[in-house]
Length: 235
Image (cartoon, rainbow, N blue to C red):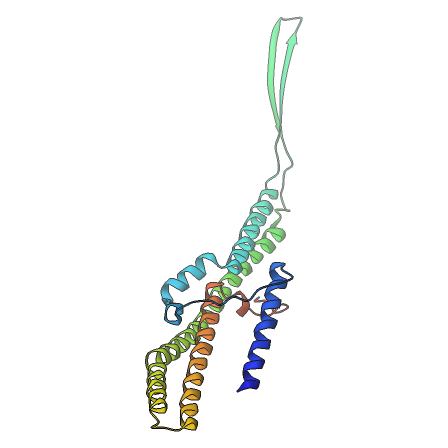
């Protein structure tokens, strides 16, 4: 038990120093945090989370940008199929007759065969591909959210079971065992066994709570850390 406590203190000190390095402090001070574990159980609703994900995912924003660029390219290539017209205004004065003469000339190339169809077709194909990539990404996000939400619900159920059932019973047993030891009704080893059971249940509750909140942060972080690895493109 002493060795475990010493190891835990060492890990806490190492974590405090890492935090100090992140915030630019050479001499970070460890401070305890007062919090009620029951208030740290986040309540998420799948429909609302999915709507928020589809509305604000940076991955989707990137795909929307690709579609917009592809649409601009289609418009540009179509514009090249229509030649520009040259307009010229002419004004003259005839000294012999005293007449003023004005005229307008409009000219431009006559396109008979080259209608830029090849470039237009390629641009339209890229637009279609960009839309398909968007559809596949939306499906991927929904699947990733479904998986993450399943882990969230499982972790939440475990946390609630530990907090509402296992821990209260372990705490009650510890109180009874402590009273029994003080009254001389049970031995010291029996008290240690009950204490160990309570501490194990407490640590398991905190571990489950940590896993729950890590999952919540992944979901609230738009599942960026759950995205396919770099080099794997959703084409």
